Image 1 (tube, one colour):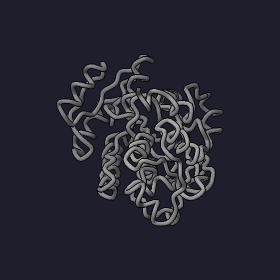
Image 2 (cartoon, rainbow, N blue to C red; image 1 turned 180 degrees about the horizontal axis):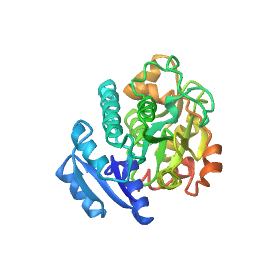
Image 3 (tube, rainbow, N blue to C red; image 1 turned 90 degrees about the horizontal axis):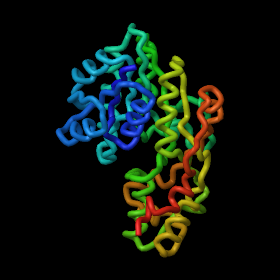
Image 4 (cartoon, rainbow, N blue to C red; image 1 turned 90 degrees about the vertical axis):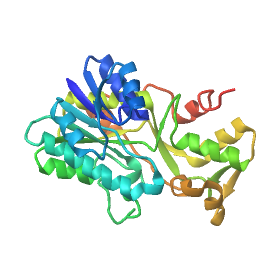
Length: 298
């Protein structure tokens, strides 16, 4: 297939593009800058110039492809509400180009958006009242696309998509620990994160595309539940700094804007995904990957 990938220069999208190309698919990636276009060209990915805000470019890219995988999101959390709105508009624009064509659209979401505090399964849907402070809902946009006749599915990523070159949540926690001179966890540290290796996640996108299930939800989850305390423990040992509990105002003082994510309880199962798609994570687990030179180069 010819697949249009948004976010193709990003952490997840670049791995998805590589996985698709290795399996024989042709990939076109969205690029908003000359640097992004050069990176795509170097990776053997065709370039489609545009951005999430350029809705005409998204419609054109989608119309020219056999399928679309949407992985792009602006992770500037100081503009979270605006970025959530931009994502909804982008998905709507792509859906407009695909409606009635039978072409597949895969939308990226996250298990942490669904039901904090319990193990989320693929059959769960987001309770809009449980986390109304999170101004992002790609699954509502996917449902709206489905209502327009788009062949759409959702892949929910674990909060930690890890691996060499990671620049997401875990590296931020490491940076905070270095800055503060201690590795902290909120409260008793029993809040738990799901995790998945970047290459395992990329394989899941490919399988979801090739199997072509409609209105399906898949979980890119290898580790179902990793206590935050254990993540902080590895970081403290690697940096040779104290590992401490933070509570009350100390949580915000230590983590800053990241405090909401540090306290997140995002457990999830991928049992149904593994059974339906035959997807089985094969890469290192989160704690093993974290406890390596990839995250702590000498």
